[in-house]
Length: 327
Image (cartoon, rainbow, N blue to C red; front, side, top):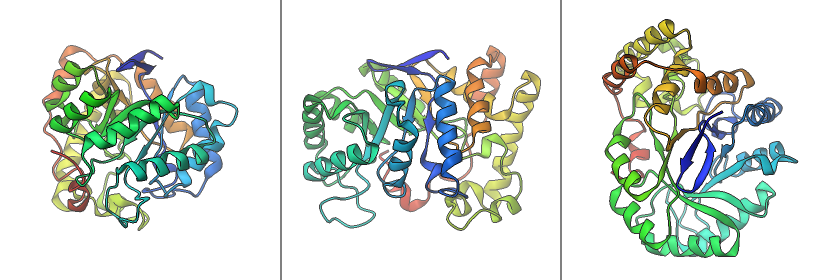
């Protein structure tokens, strides 16, 4: 697989998000053996960036990744996140990137992952109660201590990114970016000015752009624990409008001889060699499909047609979740 640059970190240009193996989606946690096979297959296919977080579960996703990476640690760039679990008693739902919480978080992640260092350590969401300079100061010390190699942010915006980068280099920003979530295009010039890569989570619109949900009945059939069941883009009139967007992607996929998921990923890869999508899956067949997007070539006309599509109707998170996203 071809590679991409996240700051000074070089990785294969398609990664793997592991959240859905343990959290958030129908069937999460029901087949750890298949999830481990999926991680193994991804590595075999050249995927390097494996992404998890302490909040997924919480904790159990890191433990699952640890099992999958046993004996294969040196083949991957291991990324995890802190800040949505408070280790200083702030309570659930309150971001905590205070120095004491970070120190507890990183030691917990290292233990669960069974490693002596984390390659890419992200602040999961900006903490409005802790100056970013204080957070980055601790992360810089963790780099010096050898516990982490590179520092990332997630869903941060211009001012926070600049202030953070002034304290210690930020290697990557992880934010939602796809054909139907395009606000990252506003910040890409800033990231490129500073030499920061973009890691795109939910590059397939939580499965919508892959064609996995085609009717309201499909959404209704999801487990109650599946957050798409109440997601603004999967409900009411928004669903029908967004279905038309997915149909446009499928039309180009038919012309290319690829799947809609592969076309959506190929479009994202065409946006720059400093962008790494991390489509999530817990199935071997899906990771094989996603990785094949690296071989899909879109014409300039096809890229322009996809770029001209309207963004999806509805927020890309619930109102409660959007309050944790800097804009």
